[in-house]
Amino acid sequence: MAKNSEIARVQKGALTADEAEALFSTVDHTGHSDEERARRQRAHRREKGVSLDIDPLSEDDPSGSNVGKVITRTAVSFVAIFLVLVVAGQVAFGFVRRSNTANLTEDANVRTVASALRGGVEWGDGFTQFPEDFSVQEADENTGRIEVTVIDTSSENSLECFAGSQVQATAFSVNALLNPNIDTVVYHVNVRLDENGNMQRSSLFGFLKPTGEVSSFMTFVWTKTQSETGVNFSCRITGIDGTLQEELRDQVTTSFTPVQILGTSE
Image (cartoon, rainbow, N blue to C red; front, side):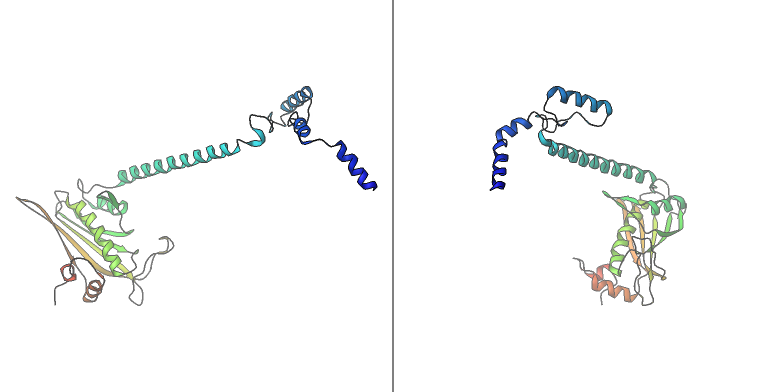
């Protein structure tokens, strides 16, 4: 009974919900309900630099109600800045790439050919790059001939190597043949084979290079002939042994018959 009487006395003196709300509406972040005392306390804290004059219960930002808006503005700003940086990086990369790429249509020599193989060439609306391992056998406008050799270490099989090398050889050769002093481009493609004769490729994002024996894969020979009616470009693929021809015939599936691409009909 004594315990119940004590609870009753406490409850009798308790504030109602409206009274509690009215009381706390006069309390700021200093913990004072007296306005003059709270003002002095805020001034003292500003002077000591230990607190900001912000009331979390004020109407300007009651209980941090503007936090969501601040987070949204911050997120939008971050995304906008990130997109600007990405676009600026792409533009800068494209400018540097073009400034470092040799134009074989104007000047074809060992230096410019090596620069083109190292930096890539423009091809259509895109950009074609070449294997990192390459050598230049000849590049002379006096003889009208360019001959290079690359080692493909990115292809997994013969069809992948054939398809990629064809694009690379075409981009490089056409770029060079647009030079009026060049009429022949020879593009050799080599690969590295393991002890079982399978192609080896680079690993660890290209940092680990294969060490297998270098073997000839195929050669693209592009030539240019001029006549009164115009300029003709033609391509011959040589250096393919019978085994590789059969393998490619089995893998190539296009609207063209395989014998039109490789070899002759039986």
